[in-house]
Image (cartoon, rainbow, N blue to C red; front, side, top):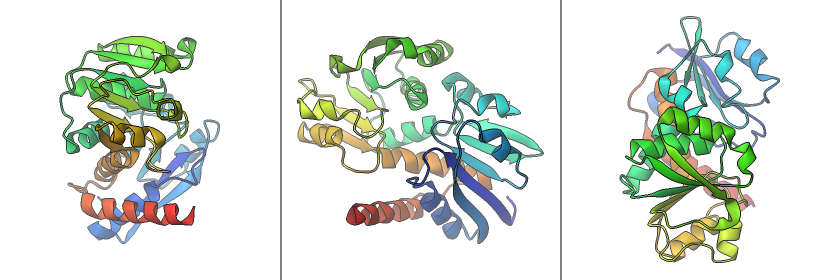
Length: 277
Protein backbone atom coordinates (compact mmCIF):
# COMPACT_ATOMS: atom_id res chain seq x y z
CA UNK A 1 0.00 0.00 0.00
CA UNK A 2 1.21 3.51 -0.79
CA UNK A 3 0.22 6.82 0.73
CA UNK A 4 -1.44 7.92 -2.50
CA UNK A 5 -3.67 5.96 -4.81
CA UNK A 6 -5.94 6.69 -7.74
CA UNK A 7 -8.78 4.33 -8.58
CA UNK A 8 -12.06 4.43 -10.49
CA UNK A 9 -15.02 2.42 -11.72
CA UNK A 10 -15.49 2.12 -15.49
CA UNK A 11 -18.64 1.22 -17.39
CA UNK A 12 -21.46 2.44 -19.57
CA UNK A 13 -23.78 3.70 -18.25
CA UNK A 14 -21.93 4.57 -15.04
CA UNK A 15 -23.61 7.62 -13.47
CA UNK A 16 -25.77 5.37 -11.25
CA UNK A 17 -22.83 3.44 -9.77
CA UNK A 18 -22.68 3.12 -6.00
CA UNK A 19 -19.03 2.03 -6.10
CA UNK A 20 -17.56 5.52 -5.48
CA UNK A 21 -19.59 5.83 -2.27
CA UNK A 22 -18.41 2.43 -1.02
CA UNK A 23 -14.74 2.83 -1.91
CA UNK A 24 -14.48 6.40 -0.58
CA UNK A 25 -16.07 5.28 2.68
CA UNK A 26 -13.44 2.56 2.93
CA UNK A 27 -10.62 5.01 2.29
CA UNK A 28 -11.98 7.35 4.98
CA UNK A 29 -12.28 4.55 7.53
CA UNK A 30 -8.77 3.32 6.71
CA UNK A 31 -7.24 6.78 6.95
CA UNK A 32 -6.22 6.78 3.28
CA UNK A 33 -6.75 10.50 2.92
CA UNK A 34 -4.79 10.78 -0.33
CA UNK A 35 -6.62 8.01 -2.15
CA UNK A 36 -9.26 8.98 -4.73
CA UNK A 37 -11.99 7.01 -6.49
CA UNK A 38 -14.10 8.32 -9.38
CA UNK A 39 -16.63 7.05 -11.93
CA UNK A 40 -15.67 7.16 -15.61
CA UNK A 41 -18.05 6.60 -18.51
CA UNK A 42 -16.26 4.06 -20.70
CA UNK A 43 -17.29 1.51 -23.33
CA UNK A 44 -15.27 -1.28 -24.96
CA UNK A 45 -13.73 1.07 -27.54
CA UNK A 46 -12.45 3.45 -24.87
CA UNK A 47 -11.13 0.80 -22.47
CA UNK A 48 -7.56 0.43 -23.87
CA UNK A 49 -6.90 4.16 -23.56
CA UNK A 50 -8.12 4.34 -19.97
CA UNK A 51 -6.04 1.30 -18.99
CA UNK A 52 -2.98 2.91 -20.57
CA UNK A 53 -3.37 6.13 -18.57
CA UNK A 54 -0.49 6.32 -16.06
CA UNK A 55 -1.03 6.47 -12.33
CA UNK A 56 -3.78 3.95 -11.65
CA UNK A 57 -3.71 1.86 -8.49
CA UNK A 58 -6.80 -0.07 -9.46
CA UNK A 59 -9.95 -0.08 -11.58
CA UNK A 60 -13.38 -1.58 -11.02
CA UNK A 61 -15.21 -2.74 -14.16
CA UNK A 62 -18.90 -3.10 -14.78
CA UNK A 63 -21.05 -3.55 -17.90
CA UNK A 64 -19.95 -3.97 -20.65
CA UNK A 65 -16.24 -4.36 -19.81
CA UNK A 66 -15.77 -7.53 -17.74
CA UNK A 67 -15.12 -9.73 -20.77
CA UNK A 68 -13.57 -7.05 -22.98
CA UNK A 69 -10.75 -6.45 -20.50
CA UNK A 70 -9.40 -10.02 -20.52
CA UNK A 71 -7.12 -9.73 -23.59
CA UNK A 72 -5.78 -6.42 -22.25
CA UNK A 73 -4.41 -7.92 -19.01
CA UNK A 74 -0.88 -9.13 -18.30
CA UNK A 75 -1.96 -11.71 -15.74
CA UNK A 76 -5.40 -13.00 -14.80
CA UNK A 77 -6.28 -15.07 -11.75
CA UNK A 78 -7.61 -18.57 -12.56
CA UNK A 79 -11.06 -17.78 -11.16
CA UNK A 80 -11.52 -14.84 -13.55
CA UNK A 81 -10.36 -17.00 -16.46
CA UNK A 82 -12.83 -19.75 -15.54
CA UNK A 83 -15.71 -17.31 -15.06
CA UNK A 84 -14.82 -15.56 -18.31
CA UNK A 85 -14.70 -12.07 -16.85
CA UNK A 86 -12.66 -9.76 -14.64
CA UNK A 87 -14.28 -6.91 -12.74
CA UNK A 88 -11.09 -5.71 -11.06
CA UNK A 89 -7.72 -4.56 -12.40
CA UNK A 90 -4.81 -3.95 -10.04
CA UNK A 91 -1.72 -2.18 -11.37
CA UNK A 92 1.40 -3.62 -9.80
CA UNK A 93 5.02 -3.69 -10.92
CA UNK A 94 4.12 -2.28 -14.31
CA UNK A 95 1.59 -5.03 -14.94
CA UNK A 96 -2.18 -5.20 -15.17
CA UNK A 97 -3.51 -7.95 -12.92
CA UNK A 98 -7.10 -9.14 -13.39
CA UNK A 99 -9.40 -10.49 -10.70
CA UNK A 100 -13.05 -11.44 -10.31
CA UNK A 101 -14.48 -10.28 -6.98
CA UNK A 102 -18.10 -10.90 -8.04
CA UNK A 103 -17.67 -14.60 -7.28
CA UNK A 104 -16.37 -14.33 -3.68
CA UNK A 105 -18.72 -11.36 -3.19
CA UNK A 106 -21.71 -13.47 -4.16
CA UNK A 107 -20.59 -16.36 -1.96
CA UNK A 108 -20.15 -13.97 0.99
CA UNK A 109 -23.51 -12.23 0.43
CA UNK A 110 -25.33 -15.57 0.32
CA UNK A 111 -23.46 -16.90 3.36
CA UNK A 112 -24.32 -13.74 5.31
CA UNK A 113 -27.98 -14.58 4.69
CA UNK A 114 -27.45 -18.18 5.78
CA UNK A 115 -27.36 -19.66 2.26
CA UNK A 116 -24.28 -21.86 2.14
CA UNK A 117 -25.29 -25.19 0.59
CA UNK A 118 -28.35 -24.93 -1.67
CA UNK A 119 -29.67 -28.26 -2.92
CA UNK A 120 -30.33 -26.84 -6.38
CA UNK A 121 -30.31 -23.49 -8.13
CA UNK A 122 -31.73 -21.55 -11.06
CA UNK A 123 -30.06 -18.54 -12.70
CA UNK A 124 -31.92 -15.91 -14.73
CA UNK A 125 -29.74 -14.52 -17.53
CA UNK A 126 -26.57 -15.53 -19.36
CA UNK A 127 -24.27 -12.49 -19.13
CA UNK A 128 -21.02 -11.95 -17.25
CA UNK A 129 -22.77 -11.83 -13.88
CA UNK A 130 -24.54 -15.11 -14.64
CA UNK A 131 -21.14 -16.68 -15.33
CA UNK A 132 -19.92 -15.36 -11.97
CA UNK A 133 -23.04 -16.86 -10.38
CA UNK A 134 -22.14 -20.23 -11.88
CA UNK A 135 -18.69 -20.01 -10.30
CA UNK A 136 -20.21 -18.97 -6.96
CA UNK A 137 -22.61 -21.90 -7.04
CA UNK A 138 -19.70 -24.23 -7.68
CA UNK A 139 -18.17 -22.88 -4.45
CA UNK A 140 -21.34 -23.98 -2.62
CA UNK A 141 -20.96 -27.52 -3.95
CA UNK A 142 -23.36 -27.52 -6.90
CA UNK A 143 -22.33 -29.05 -10.20
CA UNK A 144 -25.61 -28.76 -12.17
CA UNK A 145 -27.60 -25.53 -12.58
CA UNK A 146 -30.71 -24.53 -14.52
CA UNK A 147 -30.27 -21.30 -16.51
CA UNK A 148 -33.20 -19.34 -17.96
CA UNK A 149 -32.27 -17.23 -20.99
CA UNK A 150 -34.04 -15.04 -23.53
CA UNK A 151 -32.10 -16.47 -26.48
CA UNK A 152 -30.25 -19.78 -26.21
CA UNK A 153 -28.26 -18.84 -29.29
CA UNK A 154 -26.58 -16.06 -27.30
CA UNK A 155 -25.60 -18.26 -24.37
CA UNK A 156 -22.28 -19.36 -25.85
CA UNK A 157 -20.17 -17.49 -23.29
CA UNK A 158 -22.14 -19.05 -20.46
CA UNK A 159 -21.77 -22.54 -21.93
CA UNK A 160 -18.03 -21.98 -22.28
CA UNK A 161 -17.79 -20.78 -18.67
CA UNK A 162 -19.69 -23.84 -17.49
CA UNK A 163 -17.25 -26.08 -19.34
CA UNK A 164 -14.26 -24.34 -17.76
CA UNK A 165 -15.88 -24.59 -14.33
CA UNK A 166 -16.67 -28.28 -14.78
CA UNK A 167 -20.40 -27.64 -14.44
CA UNK A 168 -23.47 -28.74 -16.36
CA UNK A 169 -26.16 -26.22 -17.31
CA UNK A 170 -29.70 -26.89 -18.48
CA UNK A 171 -30.88 -23.99 -20.63
CA UNK A 172 -34.57 -23.11 -20.63
CA UNK A 173 -36.51 -20.10 -22.02
CA UNK A 174 -36.66 -17.14 -19.66
CA UNK A 175 -40.45 -17.28 -19.84
CA UNK A 176 -40.58 -20.93 -18.76
CA UNK A 177 -40.89 -20.11 -15.07
CA UNK A 178 -38.35 -20.22 -12.30
CA UNK A 179 -38.39 -23.99 -11.87
CA UNK A 180 -38.14 -25.66 -8.50
CA UNK A 181 -34.61 -24.72 -7.45
CA UNK A 182 -33.73 -24.18 -3.81
CA UNK A 183 -32.02 -20.90 -4.79
CA UNK A 184 -33.00 -18.42 -7.51
CA UNK A 185 -30.36 -15.92 -8.69
CA UNK A 186 -31.55 -13.15 -11.01
CA UNK A 187 -28.68 -11.56 -12.95
CA UNK A 188 -30.86 -9.63 -15.41
CA UNK A 189 -31.24 -5.81 -15.42
CA UNK A 190 -33.90 -3.92 -13.49
CA UNK A 191 -37.35 -4.72 -14.82
CA UNK A 192 -36.37 -7.83 -16.77
CA UNK A 193 -37.57 -10.21 -14.05
CA UNK A 194 -40.70 -8.27 -13.14
CA UNK A 195 -42.98 -10.67 -15.02
CA UNK A 196 -42.39 -13.31 -12.34
CA UNK A 197 -43.98 -11.07 -9.76
CA UNK A 198 -46.65 -9.75 -12.15
CA UNK A 199 -47.95 -13.17 -13.02
CA UNK A 200 -47.23 -14.80 -9.67
CA UNK A 201 -44.56 -16.81 -11.43
CA UNK A 202 -42.62 -18.04 -8.40
CA UNK A 203 -43.08 -21.80 -8.16
CA UNK A 204 -44.91 -23.57 -5.37
CA UNK A 205 -43.19 -24.20 -3.10
CA UNK A 206 -41.08 -21.10 -3.77
CA UNK A 207 -37.29 -21.17 -3.66
CA UNK A 208 -35.88 -21.00 -0.15
CA UNK A 209 -33.75 -18.02 -1.16
CA UNK A 210 -33.67 -15.40 -3.93
CA UNK A 211 -30.72 -13.19 -4.86
CA UNK A 212 -31.56 -10.27 -7.17
CA UNK A 213 -28.43 -8.43 -8.35
CA UNK A 214 -30.39 -5.18 -8.81
CA UNK A 215 -29.89 -2.74 -5.91
CA UNK A 216 -31.81 0.36 -7.09
CA UNK A 217 -34.72 0.70 -7.11
CA UNK A 218 -35.20 -1.67 -4.19
CA UNK A 219 -37.06 -3.79 -3.41
CA UNK A 220 -37.68 -5.08 -6.91
CA UNK A 221 -41.00 -6.75 -7.74
CA UNK A 222 -39.15 -10.08 -7.75
CA UNK A 223 -37.73 -9.42 -4.29
CA UNK A 224 -41.17 -8.40 -3.02
CA UNK A 225 -42.77 -11.55 -4.42
CA UNK A 226 -40.04 -13.68 -2.89
CA UNK A 227 -40.45 -11.99 0.48
CA UNK A 228 -44.22 -12.51 0.41
CA UNK A 229 -43.60 -16.18 -0.38
CA UNK A 230 -41.40 -16.53 2.70
CA UNK A 231 -38.07 -16.82 0.87
CA UNK A 232 -34.79 -15.41 2.19
CA UNK A 233 -34.04 -12.36 0.02
CA UNK A 234 -30.51 -11.22 -0.78
CA UNK A 235 -30.16 -7.85 -2.53
CA UNK A 236 -27.79 -6.62 -5.17
CA UNK A 237 -26.46 -4.21 -2.57
CA UNK A 238 -25.25 -7.14 -0.48
CA UNK A 239 -23.38 -8.49 -3.51
CA UNK A 240 -21.99 -5.07 -4.43
CA UNK A 241 -20.83 -4.45 -0.87
CA UNK A 242 -18.92 -7.71 -0.51
CA UNK A 243 -17.32 -7.59 -3.94
CA UNK A 244 -16.29 -3.96 -3.34
CA UNK A 245 -14.73 -4.91 0.00
CA UNK A 246 -12.55 -7.46 -1.79
CA UNK A 247 -11.62 -4.83 -4.38
CA UNK A 248 -10.53 -2.43 -1.64
CA UNK A 249 -8.30 -5.14 -0.18
CA UNK A 250 -6.75 -5.93 -3.56
CA UNK A 251 -6.17 -2.30 -4.51
CA UNK A 252 -4.92 -0.95 -1.16
CA UNK A 253 -3.34 -4.04 0.38
CA UNK A 254 -5.27 -3.43 3.62
CA UNK A 255 -7.15 -6.38 5.15
CA UNK A 256 -9.84 -6.65 6.21
CA UNK A 257 -11.80 -3.95 4.43
CA UNK A 258 -14.01 -1.82 6.73
CA UNK A 259 -17.26 -3.55 5.82
CA UNK A 260 -19.35 -1.76 8.45
CA UNK A 261 -18.36 1.73 7.28
CA UNK A 262 -18.91 0.76 3.65
CA UNK A 263 -22.33 -0.73 4.41
CA UNK A 264 -23.48 2.34 6.34
CA UNK A 265 -22.36 4.74 3.59
CA UNK A 266 -23.99 2.67 0.85
CA UNK A 267 -27.28 2.31 2.69
CA UNK A 268 -27.36 6.03 3.42
CA UNK A 269 -26.84 6.82 -0.26
CA UNK A 270 -29.56 4.38 -1.34
CA UNK A 271 -31.94 5.96 1.18
CA UNK A 272 -31.09 9.39 -0.27
CA UNK A 273 -31.72 8.19 -3.82
CA UNK A 274 -35.02 6.60 -2.86
CA UNK A 275 -36.17 9.83 -1.26
CA UNK A 276 -35.07 11.86 -4.30
CA UNK A 277 -37.01 9.65 -6.70
